[in-house]
Amino acid sequence: MTGVPEPIGPEAREALEQELAQLRIERDAVAATLKGTGTDTAGDLADQADELQRVTETARLDARIAGITARLSEGATAPAVPPGVIGVGSTVTLRFADGGEETFQIGELANEFEQTLVTYDSPLGHALLGRRTGEAVSYDTPAGPATAEVLAIDAPPGPA
Image 1 (cartoon, rainbow, N blue to C red):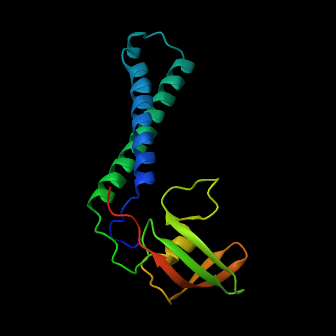
Image 2 (image 1 turned 90 degrees about the vertical axis):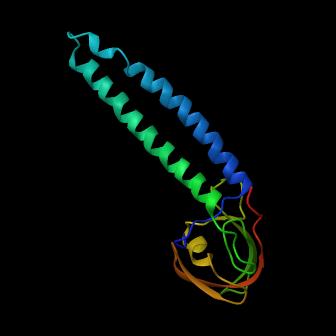
Image 3 (image 1 turned 180 degrees about the vertical axis):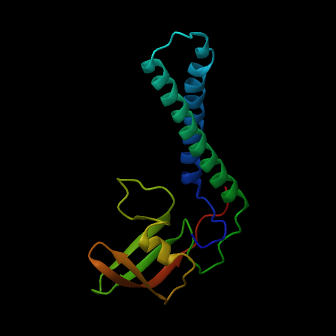
């Protein structure tokens, strides 16, 4: 990211809110198995290991819940991306070093079926944030360094 709060597009916000709701349900279910389990003093090592695994899972769920909650809060307070500047949600047309042109959307969540989505935290997405039309960007690929020129930017949607 650019170091300032990034807005969240409506689709990403909805996906994060759905994930958050599901995580809370899962966390409550795991936490419920922890209540009252300390009454059997004759528990064996397998019972103790199972209990430790549930405690660890609860901590993992708590961390993910906190991360999503923070991201949703950040997105709600993020300033609008200035006109003509690439931000999360922008649609960008690029010309690559080989002369080919492609249009991408800068998104938050990867979708295996969306071939034109570049996540903001990918090497290309990170290089594009904050750039303007006409600027060149450099980024790393598995095949080595690459460059592209920003040909056009469509503004991201306003806050939801």
